[in-house]
Image (cartoon, rainbow, N blue to C red):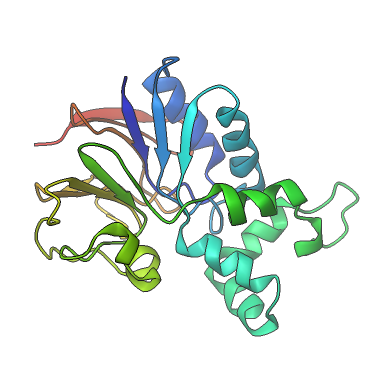
Length: 224
């Protein structure tokens, strides 16, 4: 069984589909999405719907990113709503716009998608050898004692290995070089898919990774 971690998608549905075609999913694969499905890219609605469909066929773990938190908070808070629009929320709303041409708002987000953001997405995940988070972890604390600011919002800083000895796989801190950042005990795989970079999928055991972008270019490599 492979455990495949996927970095910040940010509405880049074309890149996601091209990436998984390149990976060649197997029936026993586990896919761990590191969060930030929405905002900035052109098709947040399509990304969530596609992931929901993947969950019907594969073992899929979905983490929550800070952009999901912003979207959830924007639903009930007008100040957050206006702020969220400037962080990519406008593109997310456009992806939910009805075919009638009517201006979109959060009322057009389906209940199924709200449930995905609220209940399907998790703050973290771990297996026997790896820890998966969106943002970062404090190395001295178990996962159930990590605060939300660290898990969702903290940029990656090399604080040293986690006390558990497990390797940390995270997103959130965009690597504008387009390549994963590997510091041995931690790997950052947000490679700026919503900019001019790539969407990355990492096989956590072998260190092999695949990448695709929004024009369906692909490439691959192996962590040093």
